[in-house]
Length: 193
Image (cartoon, rainbow, N blue to C red; front, top):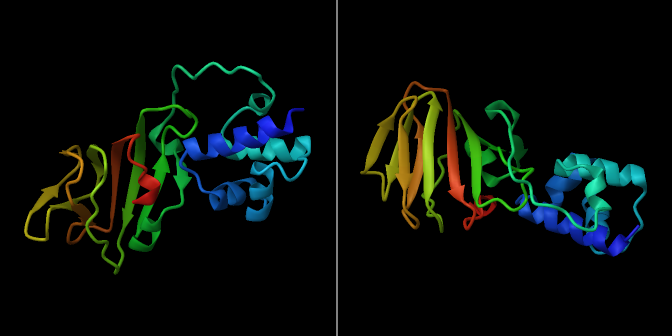
């Protein structure tokens, strides 16, 4: 067992999935300290521990022991099977679900985002990449540049933003829930948004 390679592989795979140490710890059932020590080659994990970490990363445990790995060429999934990602949006009544977390070397980052009625309003964000937005359910107000420029959106409407455009989204009046599909260019790290 090449423990150094395993430690590096865990860190690399976690980062490629935009997953924090805290999120991996929570998903695997280990402490943040344990994951940090594993990634820094300071402990010798058991096979059972590696199995839990592999499950949390959404990979086969055999990936820890392969000397050469072929990149994943395709990935299938379902909109309802996204991996929930812990982001600061939760305090604004938003839940993020990564749809391609199992493909480490992806160029796009698709997410399903759920919006719930919340009293705290999120400020404007500007990403370092382009963004494609599709409203799947509910009704939203999509603000661009400032609070004076908004577009009312219903199901199946889309929005495409160039990089660096300030924007924010909120539930429309009378709507308590909405669901959208958002695709970011991988150059943007949506975990920091």
